[in-house]
Image (cartoon, rainbow, N blue to C red; front, side, top):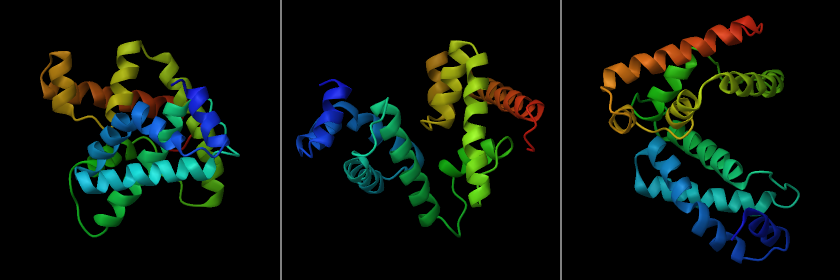
Length: 185
């Protein structure tokens, strides 16, 4: 079913919307959650929470991209759950992703910073637009979808160390771009 049809089911309050969402985007949502949490049961709970949030927010929301909308929701739930589960511990997984990007972008902590986060999002999108397709896909797969360096290196046919350096150059490029736009990093 097309996204517009699925969204229409949400607006009609038809429970088939959940089944159609799971059929079309369930594997993507599970992949995002698993890449962050590394735990099947926690990932499934985040996916279920994502479907509930979609049900509760449509209407009034009518997302232009259902895939991006669901991806953002499941990613936010997964990161929140990860932080709650590991509040006093340091683990790999999401902690590595967040620490790598922390060099470039700090998380919004206050209401005023949340307003700035919208501007920051626009700047990051503009920066992504300057990258070639492969670099953009690499950055998104690593830092949005949470794909592992080893997995990405295998797909690209490079050594993990070489890919780690490339990702570092991408992060440095983002940092420099943000600084040139007046963002304090």
